[in-house]
Amino acid sequence: MNEKKSLDDVAVKMSLRLRTVADMLRGDGAHKCTADVGCDHGYVSIYLVQNKISESAIAMDVRKGPLAMAESNIREYSLEKDIQTRLSDGLTELHEDEADSLVIAGMGGKLMISILEKKDLVGLGIKTAVLQPQSDICLFREYLRDKGFAIIDERIILDEGKYYFPIKVSPGDGVSGSFSELEKAIALFTGICDPDMALKACNLYGEHNILRRDPLLKDFLLHGREVDESILKGLDEREHSKRYLDVKNSLDIISAVLALFD
Image (tube, rainbow, N blue to C red; front, side, top):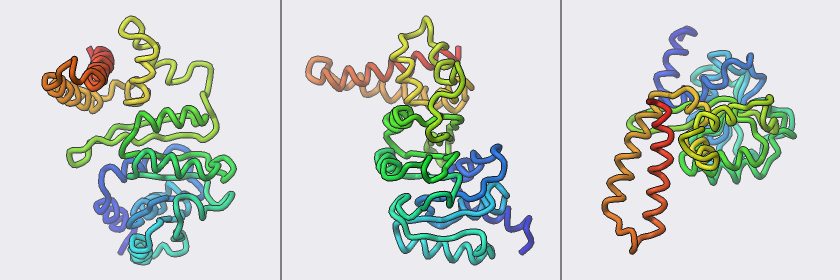
């Protein structure tokens, strides 16, 4: 199998979500080694190495079955010298200075927080990470900010009818520059809503996506507005006061962000 066919072949086997997550590591120069946590079939690691995004990779999973499948796929692409496989609960088996970049994709936000809490990424030598939580995205972004991660890029992806929000971060950098992307995004909401609501919007949808006025974000918000309005019609404000207020707040935030697209 020639190199071009191999590149096309592995890309076809990957979802748009995983290809986008892997491609978000581009632009930093070639990474020395990428730790792929929750590697499943190993395609992200294979894609990173074949596309020269990373010189090598460590494909890690807590389950023996997916790891065995990853090992088989790595052999199929003759990349045994470039990609290790490792049975690991999150980052527990990753050692200092083994990898300079990290991918964790397709897990719940709270699970990803627990993984990040168990290891110091700066101490491990991780300079760049792409993180794609499946749930609790607002909570996850709040966690990143609290821990001093710099959010340096974000995307919104529509893949097979579902929206995903991968986040590219630099661990331990905090806010870079005197006027961060978060501050720029919050400033856009001046005259639309207060800074607290603007920050909530950034935690929900991502300041980079908001600054770009990403068309997919608009579609996502329009759908969310329809859902919230439908829920609100079925709620009695007095009988379900907390739920009613939560949905109303959600609608207010959606309206504030949609106002930026006008």
